[in-house]
Amino acid sequence: MHGDCIPITPGKPDEGIWLEKRRKGKMSMAEILKSDHTAAEFVFHDVVPRGKYFVVIGSRCAKGDDFRVVRARHEVRVV
Image (cartoon, rainbow, N blue to C red):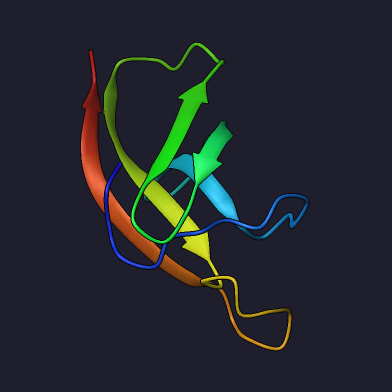
């Protein structure tokens, strides 16, 4: 995934990439293989049922714990 300012700090439970449903919340967490200011590589190991989800990126943009997590989401379809 490519974007702007999406580095994810390892070990922070509120940062990461996940799939979520509008009413059910987080459905599957991704393993982050690599992330920096312009790109993130990740993989989902869970089997996710078919349907529409939001892929969500939660990041502090490597600014430290004093900053809030900013979330960006995009609707995707699992087939």
